[in-house]
Image (cartoon, rainbow, N blue to C red):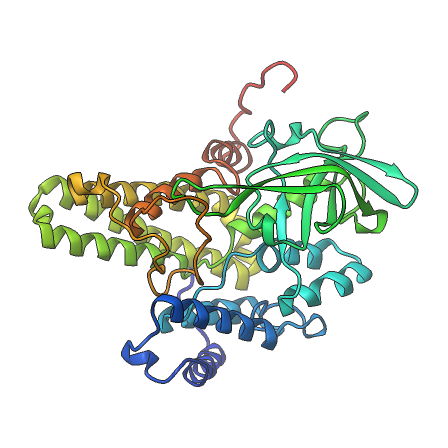
Length: 414
């Protein structure tokens, strides 16, 4: 692990700090920030600015609208955004998932067609991997794509699809060859959402807000030139997408949990729970886990800037994903416990703005459920050990591919 930055990197950091001072509103550094509807409006303006100026995808090449930053420069940018308390860009499927995958696997036509609209924010993407009967065992997916001339005709259902109601495009996995072993007969397709045969059904999250959807494909079409990475190679391409999802914000994501821990400490101090030795012990353990997360983030960055060390960091993404998602569940469990009986009462306000600095804007409410911010965070943390590869699957990856342990026994046909 290397925690030092070069003089050149620090000069870049200084230029980013100046850019942020110029870009953020007057009084931002003194804590004078918008709230309520004004916060939502500011977040939208900020998001538009990032897309308009190429900062939405800073490491992408200039020719596609990005800023051409190195991996280390991108880390510094993320650190400075976090230190400034600037709004966090939504974890969009285009910028974070399919965009980097297209950069890695796409041909020239696909890069020129799909990357610039992502940078500009004019095309929103969603992810079509999970199905009602294919989640952790994704290779058992049932969605099919059958060749018809110059198109693939798609039939099937995807579920837990984030941002689907607003999406213009979806990157999905479909079985294009049923006659080969199941991992080899899958293709990665780039599909338009606004067409006949695509039906979106929103699914309410536990706190009553939107975010997920079920998406039905009934005769939807996709051009044969929109297969990413080659026909039948979808399993390999999809695994690279999941790698991008697990590897973002390596040196800054721990700060979110530090902030949540400090909020819990403040509540415990106010209601006297900080004197409880068991509460203090849990807080100490969680704070230690957060610092481990911080150190592992720097280890991941070290692997980016020093390729000779990457082999020694094999499996760190899977390890980190298990660590932070289970840490977040323990942290939010503690937050509810510190509240005591009042933590079981819905004390939130419907339509209330999110805590400043967490996310950009807020999700639409599908039904009335006035959860407090602490309660909504607790409910959302349940999903962390599922999305991006379940903890059970990540432990298998660590055991088999990193530690070299025997494969987990498979059931017949599995």
